[in-house]
Amino acid sequence: MLLPHLAGSLLLLLAGVAKLRRPDGTARALRAQHLPSSPALVRLLGAGEVLLAAAALAGLPGTAWAVAAAYAAFTAFVVVALVRGAPLSSCGCFGEPDLPPTRTHVAVTAALAAASAGTALGAGASGLDGLAGAGAPAALAAAGLSALVAWLALLSLTALPRLAAALHPSPATPRSAS
Image 1 (cartoon, rainbow, N blue to C red):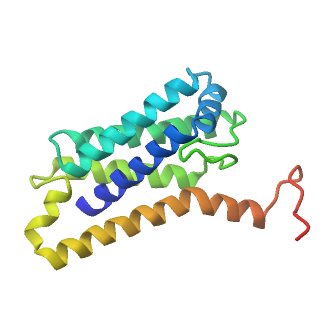
Image 2: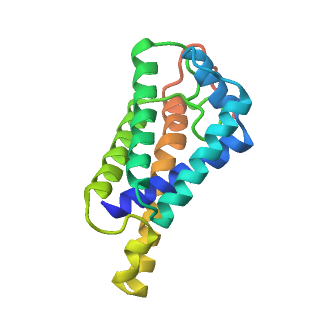
């Protein structure tokens, strides 16, 4: 469970940096769900995500549980938004506009929550230090695999919704004339 936990921690780091740089998408998503939504609050959330991700990657005690709780909260937010059917043009996760939350988003964040919880339940290390015992080549390969999984998860949350929208535009979305 360590590799998907590390991938989730990397993804959390990316999301936190994105919120620090562009808080408006997350602020709109929170506002649509009638939650506190100031850009300053979103930046604070982003800073918390960056700090949590760094602590998790360092393997600090308890951080795997905190990452699991964060992903469980993200999953719950998206599920509530989907169930309510409230207009939510973006989840705001990566500071990008017009990336609506999807069932894929729910599946990815729920899987990352489960992976981090599984890591927390395990007896071994929960950070990059957990790769050290495998020897340098295996540790580098595992770190690279974690980064690849994080990138694929990022694509499933960003590029996949764009692709789906391009293949199946809504009646209100005009096709580009390219």
